[in-house]
Length: 528
Image (tube, rainbow, N blue to C red; front, side, top):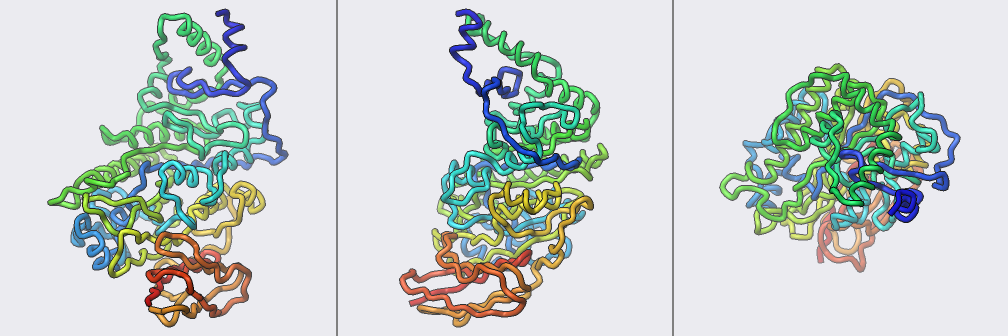
């Protein structure tokens, strides 16, 4: 087959060619490809967001331990509970602690470089790994399917017409970089993935040294070698990445045998090297801990402890490196997983797919502390009981976009497709975010109560609002929204509504109040 025939018969207008350029997925486009049309100007910023995906569904209750409700926690998890005297304490906090394997995150919290957002999820959670991951990556509703990602939409909004006309003098570097073999939906823009992919840390260093992949000595191998040559000649981003990496001959120490640490080491090097890349995405796997989550004789050790230790040590080394390189002011990171685990452990020393879980947001310029309250744990948790979500995960996305990248409200609604509450996560003097200083951080103030509790068919729910848009939902034990009792603008004050539960089964329900930055969940028990 001749080269002209090869290209005409095998390459459509826009395709991904994995591995054509040692560790990168290179996309080839023709003039017929559809492109983004926009007149929006790019926002000037040197800020960087690092996304860390914990693949498999991390057990949040054994990561951030509700010491306040330790008796209920231990009762629900008698075979995997962390002993209370082994829980890592946090400065100024008596109700909450960390898994003993997370000493690095404990240090970051005590240094004012970590925010813990409690019970992050969304209405009517999906417990499929694949679907739940797509929801978190795209920022969609549970029943909504999107083919774009939340950061992809943000970057497409910032860099109109990409990839046409890029790289250029204003943006000479990739808008995003993902370290991993599979392109993440989170970075997918309206017409093209906004990221370059680095297959793994080893391939990155081969790439810097211009070490190519081997090709088979076949006709197809020769064609592949030719495509690589063309891709290498036209991929100007590769020169920018090599130049940035070359500026950083030495870095801080990172733990060995830690895949996440090695990925974050690359991120630190490229940030210090001066890349204008705004979003980096890395990942680590193994969090689907249905069995063997802990060692039977020592619940502080085992698979989950190793996973959390890997994450904690990697992030701490990354933060130390950024500080040593003099760029920690520029970087904020966050962890996320597709879902949490059930409140009650199973008989296999593990946990099953659940709903909400905590999210870590870390960096020198985070607003440190604990956002939200420890999740309520029923006295006699059943195998179906889930942690009710307090904060919608898209509120975290929206807050970081507005507070860290200074995205304007009008653009924010276009990117996130809806309005989501603003919660305090980041400091950036260039942004003009207001109205988030009054967030309640475990203050104990009761914003939503109900009477009677327990109840049979109905109960009165009283809630306090500081004014503005106020949302009051009732969730069941699976995290599904069964009633919306308030969803409008209120004047400041206290209001009472009735929750009629005729037709609903007995069990625990949750009243979830959302009013600006204020957030609270109240447990309610329906009996016969």
